[in-house]
Image (cartoon, rainbow, N blue to C red):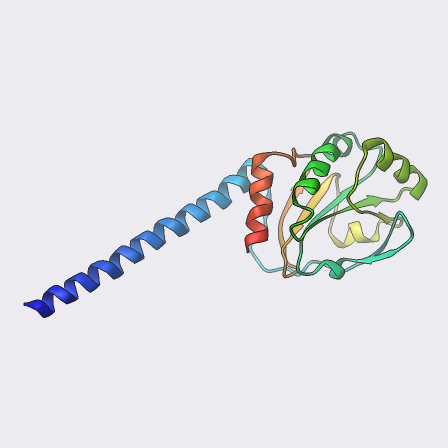
Length: 185
């Protein structure tokens, strides 16, 4: 009888752990779905490696996407004349300030504008994140950008995680949860 009791006790513990884990994983999945839906993000279901590129920053330094492997990357395509781009820039700056010391980087890729125009814009909006110049629009075409702003989230391993077409409030709690989720992966 003691053997049956021990087995019953062991089975109860294993079953309890299994049930508890299923709730934890369900909550995690539900949480991911919540911020993806609330931010209207398009989730990449397949593992797609982000296309590497080399672009100059505003100081003339060549920046390669792969230089940031191991960090969560917020890759944003924009222009200075785009009203939705201008609207989302202050919230991007807040997001950058909040996470810049946590293996997170924003790479804002300006499309087909001269460096002086972009430099003035950066100063006016007091932006501290790196801005890169896609003078020919080649990198934007790699990523299939057909409208701006367009944002891609790249995980630490270099895979595309999700995309956003159009402006968002990147200083929202849902955006913070998204970045925390990617940092924890």
